[in-house]
Image 1 (tube, one colour):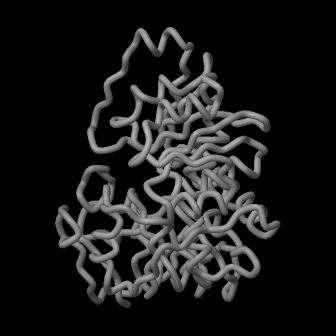
Image 2: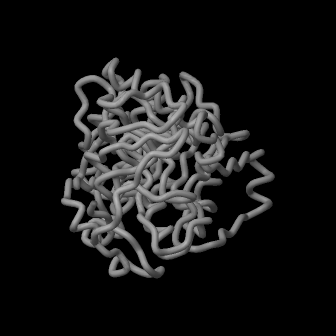
Length: 324
């Protein structure tokens, strides 16, 4: 089969499109013919070794996928061959989804939502489970609260805008231009703040009558944490789910103590395979109900994975998806 592997850590140039042996399902394994694989920031982190993983090169990258069950190993009752599924959580301790076939555990297989393309289903994985973990599991977002979503037009951000809207929150979205603003308003944002045109802190204070927001979903902690403390209400929560450009962040401790700030760091991988699949099942239900939809930015052939990672490093809208 064709796959994209790294033989050494590095930039996008480390990605190699090549022939590898097609895997066979062992006991308790499911072989999926991959129809689409989403590109995520964690994939780039694995590629550069910014996120060390148990499996060393050479290895196939990719966390998210969608496809059709090709075969199952011994002792697997569900899913059955021919079933359309989507899944996440690969590429860390296992081979990933940038390939024509992938092995997954039965618990990772979630039925693809009716009416969704494979590309759209693949785009649900990391983006929506990360947004859910930050907003729901960590921050406990409630109806009637006000939430600020940083990087709202990206994969996780656009998912978070929709989830927050679906849960009855007022959504303020930080964007990088007019096109981003139009998109997130279509997804449910009540107000947008252009970080290139406005002082984000001042604008958020104005939009909240100087009260601040209850919850911030922060994707760039190292760059924004100090400013976030100026934008939350007393007792507000900052869900920190993305580190940003620096491995450390400055914390004005007096300011944080003064507003009773709750800093909630989170990694959706801590939910485990079963917990993640449970979240994906709920997300699929909301998709079928019309409350959520994945946002696809670009679809590229698997052979252009290097280009996909270059696009990922710059400003982009929605998810980048690879198709074998």
